[in-house]
Length: 609
Image (cartoon, rainbow, N blue to C red):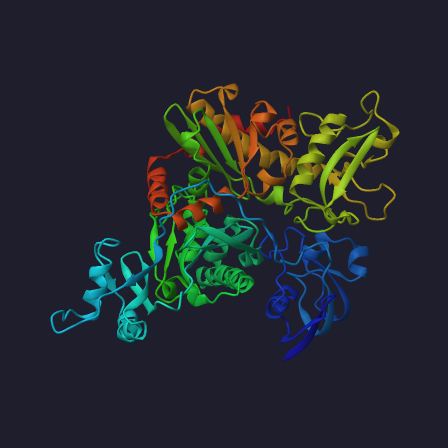
């Protein structure tokens, strides 16, 4: 039996099997909903409104997470509510739907252009009775100074004779590594393109590059479609363990995401998939495994052993990437179970070993990764920051989309908020969370323990601030939007606890690496913040929260998507690719969970300064 469902406000319709969940129906309608808890009914983030139609009775999870008034008004959880008949479902505008997000390309430090895929224009002497070499030997001889050993793909040999004679023995040879993959007459001038891909747990970014010049052409990005099975890597690894085809499903979703943004980038520049000869890949170790179709389950249990940490080169068909069929896909090496190729990319792109002073690099995501270069040692560690900084475990948390509170500032005797797009506030994203926590600490309405002040407020608290602090005990909360709004956006006691756990994990990792290097915080020459947080989080707020060690704010620098920049360097330079392997081999991985002092460091780091 099938039923018809329409999703508003987009007006997307689909005929789907009866009894499937609303989130499953949305997926079949090519409308992906964000399910931070993997569809287990734990987070309450997939709320939709039933405008009309027949759905199953509310589940235990829905009754627990939704108020009677919300249920009465048609509010349901998409991962729990099942379609029993035709229905019209409204998806809220505050970006529960995973959509495409544009990211700006990052500047890459200058390096000598030496890509693995290249195009060589060559003029050959025609054959004669005195020179009866084969067509391939003739071409190989002319290219001997470029590549010592040239191997020809059969498909290239099939077009070789025709291309030579059509071009009067002047041809363009397309070479990937030591393989001749294509030959065209010299007048045709084919494009030789590459793409660097950063597979983030949340967002996947692709940089399209002209390999003849090394110049980035455009960027495309989208939310990782795996997100429907959990916002963090642990949820996705668990999915692989509880579903027979879990690895194949998640691999298919990330390939769908990657191929989609590659096609978008090529389309922007009027290019074809046949023009794309090389792809480089970075991601955390779990994302790396899922991209290659490797079982990641051992990453989630001690001793956290990956299937492989080495760099791997794959054929396009094997990798599942839509590109030139004889091109190459290169996965950068990882370091450990939770320190991946994205960290290698950060270390490579920032050139942190050659900056002349101790450097700390932090890539904050659902999995926080920390690298420290000091006294001739490169120490790396990971910490389970979780998705709180991305809003997944925050009551009014949301992604960085229109309506999200992105900044909170003190103004006069109260606060001032700034939303993305200047729209009415509908939630709060990561940068706004950092600001909000920093501001409530500065106002004295949250104690160093993380507890909201109960009872008498600090002396001098203005009426404008006092009216924003409402509720008692565990229901205590600080209203960020207009207190007179019917449904204001607020920071709750539970939110503060989630932020404490996340920032405590990051800070504990930093402190323990500094301790192992016998380095004081003031000896750090720079603290580099990578990823979206490096671009958008106010360093002053991060310091006030105590997530970063006490260093002068001018030493804290955002380096953007350094992981993607590392993938781009490996795309345009074989020397940088080799350097990435050297850095991965030189890195000393510190497994924090085995350190006896970790729990104490974590408890200390949870306290706000």
